[in-house]
Image 1 (cartoon, rainbow, N blue to C red):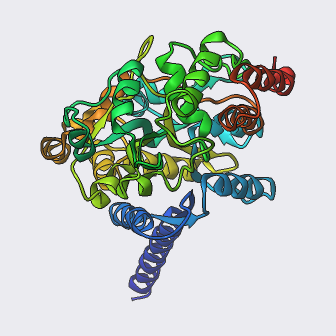
Image 2 (image 1 turned 180 degrees about the vertical axis):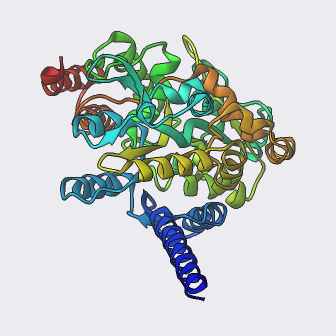
Length: 437
């Protein structure tokens, strides 16, 4: 009997140890990841992200995603870097692709290459459109090319036009201006003035606040010139082709008089389009769903007009992994980013928001094929990627970008000539980047 009791006690102890190990393992597997996401206000975007987080947690019960909605991209960058320096950084953040050099210089992020474990992971990292990877990869301190960001909500600048306005002006409503010359010619017919000369409808509005440099790249890219080198250490603002592109932007209002003079607000441009104050706008493809839901007229979407070439800069946000994570947290973070950028999710996100689905196979999903068949305009930004270039991004990017933005606005408001504005911007950029030469 004594032997039986001893055996039972031993078995009970073994069961207890086993259960304890299981509970301990379960506790260890419960990982909470902080995810900083930029959104200026609440609404549908936050609901979509919350829905994704909930679905991911259901499929991965050992991982919890704590989404932190931090305001604008700039707010989110400041919040993330402040948290990093205080010793409690986010695990994952969506920040501008152009923040890559800033985050590297702050030693805040790790390259994805450091967490890719197998061939499947490596194939995933190579599954995105090459144009988006231009703002996602650069050299490391050892000189080796690394992937620092993974594309998520990415975009290009596209042109929206009001088909009713084109028809009223005697133009083909199904044909957008394909070149600078056509834009000027069509613009003269689209600009509507009353007998006193007051403009009731402008031909075009290209926003010059918010992201002037980005819209400007729609002109410089068409003029076959880039604004910076791939290492983010040099700019070419005073290149004659850059100056010519800015002169054309100024001429739209001062010479051809088909665009309002001065600066045009980024945030109100879609509203002006809806209210028929302008027949054409340039804006992010991320506005596609907004325009589709709010334009009370037939509209078209086109690539930006060509000159020496055609194209646009890419834009938008990437996923970044912050340093100071344990190996388990890094693995969980990678799992979440892979899940969020799967073909099905990339397609769903593109359909819901208007951003470009970031990988080619997302466009082969049944949902995306159906969407494009019903709404062909959704594929314009994707097709424009064949002509796209990297968005302006350098070391100390915010100061360099401000120098260019100030120059663009000075030319548009008439306080400087385009040539002087770009020469001054280049002098300032050279001064800022001298430390990174």
